[in-house]
Image 1: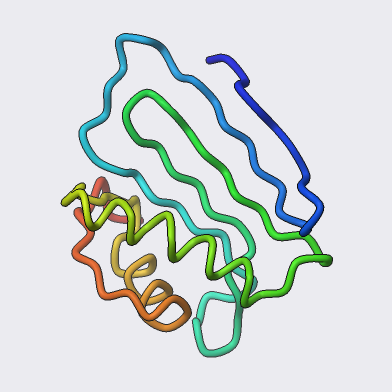
Image 2: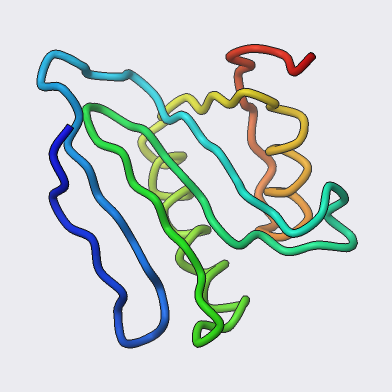
Amino acid sequence: MVLVKGKLNEQGLYYVLLNLHPKLNFEGVVLDLETTDYEPQRGEIICAGFIYGNKALVLMRTKKLSKERFYEKLRKFVTDRIKKQTPFFAYNAPFERKWLKEHLNIQLEIGEIMKPA
């Protein structure tokens, strides 16, 4: 794993881009959202991680960046992958699906990697 770029931009978005092992070429996107509450009606998305191809991308919101601007960036990343017909996967797909719908207005089919205990 090699850090390609890690940066806090002037808008308050911190992002980390990693190159994973060259032999890894994941055909899809693994999605992981970090939130402030279990229920979307009470919380916010504060961090999102994506693994795609042989890259890993983490987007984190700081206090400087508004929730709306952060959500715009997340929405763009996800919709760009949807346009390419890229399949999505998650550890707890119902949780991720619920948050995407409630906060980003995205209805997405997400494959389950593994169900939580």
